[in-house]
Length: 445
Ligand SMILES: Cc1ncc(COP(=O)(O)O)c(C=O)c1O
Image (cartoon, rainbow, N blue to C red; front, side, top):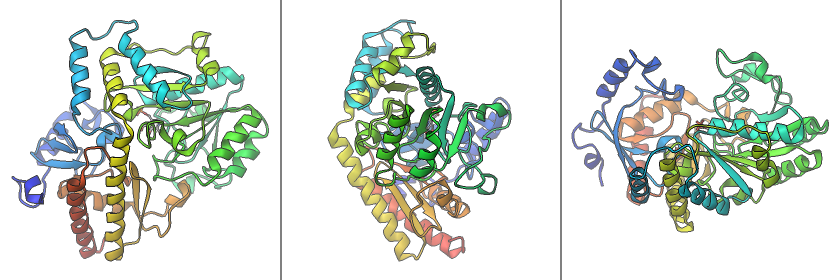
C-alpha cells in the first residue's frame, strides 16, 4: 500500500482545517474545546474523529490516519474489534444499568482473576484514577499508616492526592536524592502532599532507607515507567522493592493501568515475576470501554466488605462488563506474539532510520508500548535521565508524521495493537523516513 492509497483526496499531505474549525466552535461549550486536558495543546490542533477501524482512525477532514495513540493505550485489539462489538450489542438488548450484580460481571471478574497473578480478589470501577484512590485507601486501612511513597515521573491519575511530581520542571524538583514534591495543577489542595513521599525510581537504596522508619502505608509505582519514557526496571529492582516492602510491613501497589493486559495477559507483574500486594488496571482491560479494576490479596481486598468504602454508580456497568469479558477472552498468547513481531519490526526500523540519517535518539521499552527520545545517546533509567531529550524536535516530528497520515503521541510513546500488521508498519516507516529527512532539511534535527 502506498501513501496515495491512504490519502486519496488531499494530495501528499493531510490537512486538519475542519478539525480546527470544530474545536474552535466547541470552545463555546467546553473549555479548550475538549473534555480532558490531555487532549489540549496538540499540534497542529486537537483532532475531531468520525470513526475507527482496525489500526486506522478517520477524522472530519477525511484523513485516514494510522493510529499509535490507540485511545491513549486501551485499544489493544484495534478499533472496532468484531468480538467486542458483538458482545456489547447483544448485552445492550438486555438492559443498561441495574444497580445490582450480573452474570457477565462475575464472568469478567473470574477471567480477570485467572489472568492476573496478584488477583485473589478484585473490584471494578470506571477509571484508573478511581482505582488508585481505592488502592491507597485499602492500604491505609490495612496498615493504620498514612504515608504513601510515589516516584518522580510516574502518573497515577488526576486526583489531588497523587498528582504530584508527574512531569516537574527539573529546576524545581530539588536534589534527585531527595526530590521535592511538585504540584501538578492549579487548585490542588496544597496539603494533599503532606502524606506523600516522592523518590527517584530505579533507586533501591533511597527506598530502603525511607521505609526503614516503618511509617509508610504503601509504595505505588508503574512497574515499568511508561508515562514518562518506556523504562524497564533495572535487574533486581522490583525484587528488591518487593523484599523491602515485605520486611517493613509496607503494601506494594503496582499501577498497571498502562502495562496491564498490554505487556502480556498477566501484565508487568507476570512478565517480571514479581507479585505486588495490590494492583490497579484500566485501559486495555476492555478495549476502550470505561472499565478499571483494583485487585490483590484476598485479606486486603476483603476490607472492602469490612468498612473500607469503595463505590461508584457505574461500577461494573453490564455493557462495559460484556466488553471486558470479550476483551479478556481475546487476549491469547498468539495475539501477544503477533504484536511482539510487529512491534519489534517497528522499533528496529526506527532505529535503522535514525542510524542511517545520523539522528541521535533512543528507542526503548517493549514491542507493545515503546518510546522514542531525540537527543539521548543512551536509554534513560529514570525521570531525570529523560530530561535531556529534545522535546521540541519530537513535537515537530510527530507533526510531520501526522501530515503524512501517522498519528503518534507528542510525548514519544507508541502503542501497538494486534491490527498493526507488516503493511501498516512498512507504511509507517516510509512516513518516518520522509519526516526525518524533512526535519534535517529544516535543521530541526
Ligand atoms: C499508570 C496510570 N495510572 C493511572 C491513570 C489514570 O487513569 P484514568 O485516565 O483512566 O483515570 C493513568 C492514565 O493514563 C495511567 O497511565
